Image (cartoon, rainbow, N blue to C red; front, side, top):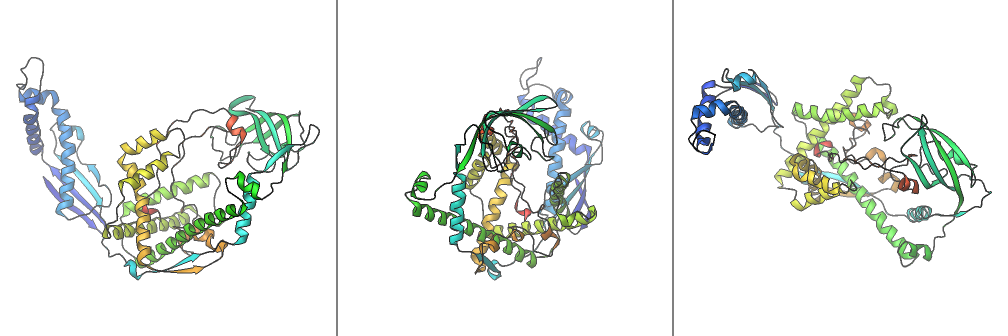
Length: 510
């Protein structure tokens, strides 16, 4: 076996590896000798099949396994002999035809390219200084939450058969949707409640019910949004034959002890206390997110080292794929609309580099601190991911159990959060009181890059890659994801086919 280094530029290394035909043939003979005692073939006594016959019968398949194992062994030897810590899997290119190598007509000669991990000294967490914004829960927030609760618990009463529906009324209807005269799956419902002006159905649907009264028949003409969840319906014109059964008006909810009891509380004061605790928990989580953002900014400022090219390219590909999807859906930031593709790629590549750099820094700090992800922590993450696929929990859990790579994608964000908490414990963290609006300001989202840097402008690319839910029942008219209305329950649904979930991206996504 001959290993020759052909390139050593920065973090990119290449090697030419040659294993002579004679060595491969020796390995094949050794393999045949190893299995010969166990071989049983018709016409021969067990364990007495001649080596030459075994070679004629199974030589090619055995040689294929030998070639694969030899390539793995040779690449590992090249890495170990040169003290290389690879940044990802090596890339191989065969110099000779695989068929010729397996047939014993050519040497096993291949080219191996590998990116190596950069060597750097991570910043000392104890020397970092972080400001953590905090906000107190105001009486105004509590009252607003109470009002929102009352709004969500709003009830409706019958207006009578002659009263017309107005904005804010609830209209109980049966409907059948058709495209080009043909009914489509999920496009029908009975006793669906539509609140006019709530914005829970596709644009134009609710508004056309204004003025209807019990007993009316009306055809609603709408157009499905271009980015509608069902590709079969997206952008299509549709008509809904609608029968109005009842028109109801909203009844104001009185916020008192009785209202609190309906929500499972002893009285209104107990409900207020529960709301305060909930808001305090939300504020605390957001404060931690903001502190994390500033911690990542500080780490980014503290480190400047070469990055593995393939790692950056892989991260950029993930980001750019999302950008292209957003562009296709018409979801582009105003500031980006007039930029060329080259300008956008340059900015998003800067984001990819930041994410890779921070991922490497967090990984190094975590390794030095012996931070690990316990089995029970991973199990909780798998369970949480499975719960995102109602009705398919067992299949999703089994997918992760059998797929180490998928487990690694779940483990990475857990590891990252543990490293961040570790650093925050050691760093000098000063609480700075701010308003609620300042605490939740969009331009300081966790993991985003600081303002006035290329990455700061990219809200799209700053998104984490979260698992896509398995296809839900097609609900028509379309409802917002968070809304659950009678129509959705009544509409027929096709059982979703389990999809392989894509877990959250690893620590390099910051």
